[in-house]
Length: 437
Ligand code: F0G
Image (cartoon, helix red, strand yellow):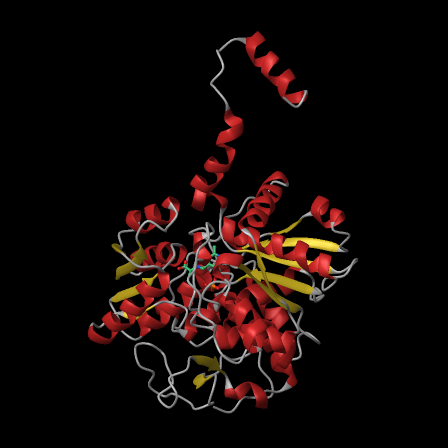
């Protein structure tokens, strides 16, 4: 397709799937979206962008902004609003619930305490099912619908399963989710059940579930919605576009994201790098990835192998969303760290818990994995990587109510015995609290 020099709306362009290691193009990717030559993951590329006239980029901001006021579902969506930079999907196949459109909240007190110029939280937990997954699932399931699939599946630490179940229900598709038994926060499990997924709990961790899912997908005609699916990352990259709009296109110094299977950090980086390549920003922010110390394969890969070979670990953390030891997208994440100059850090269970409570105290709840970002930021400020006066954005990936058991266990100590329904008793109790007892 040749692009015209003048147009009212920038046209959508065709995409291709390219191997992130050997660069081979895959015309017909298999069910696991791996390169036919070297078995590495694929990414979506848009070859026609390189020949696009300057108007293509210039018009984008305007068109995206104008769509904000529209009630058409694909304009109201904080993902599909950016469809010029997404794979083309026919309007009737778009499965959307208005995902994206999440708030950017200032963390004034914390920013002040850390001597930052500005500290902001982009709350992806405010998506329809309470996590960032919805932005990616909306795109990938729309592709699946267009290809005629009627069943979708995933392995999950919880959030992907909730999102897959909800979007499949919207699209009248069957969903199958494999979960690590006993290791999924109850809010997430409840969502998958309520949305009607076939929930299978396996005696395995997430990595074990994903391995089984790959084998199942080779045998059954079910569409895989894990982040090995490159279309997932296309949806998730739109957070970069939305964030830049919210910042009036002033690039922050740092963006900090938690890392598990490493699809999200890869998507975030892809979004910013595409904006740079299209001339919409001059340079991307430094994207730093934070892992739990008990589930830190990327940190070890960077430290021990300079990012060249994956160091697998046996994962253990109470931030169950990121309890992952063999991340599928590690190569993509390493590339994001290298191309944006970001850091990779791990944080202890205590540091995650403290950061989560601090975010709560500022009125911004989130789930434990998301709080790893603030814990990581504190470490990066201490090491001097994040400097005083800089602007930093934390990507909060999941809603606080996903994992209330985590909070209740931490708070049990201070709840105490119930009080008699008596005014004097209540006032006495409040006086005790004020006195710090
Ligand atoms: N934060 C939350 C709340 C998550 O649910 C996940 C991943 C991550 C961070 C890490 O993102 O895997 O792209 O690096 N949850 C997946 C799931 C694994 O199954 O819900 P990632």
